[in-house]
Amino acid sequence: MIYRRLLGFPTWRFRSPFEELERIKRQMDLLFEDVKTPFQRSHAGVFPLINLTEDIHNYYVRAELPGVTADTLDIRITSNNLSVSGERKMEAVVEGAKYHRREREAGKFSRVIGLPGEINPDKVEARLENGILTVTVSKAEAAKPRQITVRS
Image (cartoon, rainbow, N blue to C red):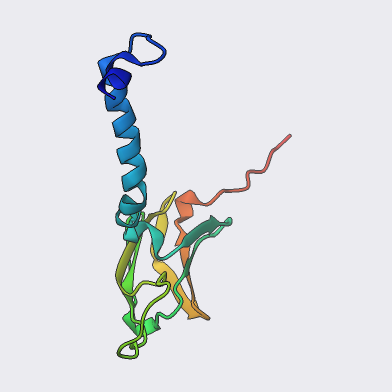
């Protein structure tokens, strides 16, 4: 067995001493692949899911917030950033119940969204309907495109 590993028996080719270490490293990576996956999730980047769109006059931020009520939300706007934070609560679990799958998370969340241009912080509206938060942020007059007439 020692001859087989060190000398490559029965092929008799020269083996680098690092080949065995590389093989062990690959096996360890495969072993820990399943273990490390749950710990690598970034909770702040996952919840809530957000879309940012714009038209000529406004920016629209839409966030998926199922199970969140309006009174648990905190929305703030500063310069070119919109902050959405709150808490999602889950229904109480029956005592003695076993989970077969648990994908929905409960707890506090916070997201900061950078807006691509200047805004008017006095004209911001927020609406929560059917688990979708829509925040309408008016663009600053300097950021809005202007129609320029061409004289001939």
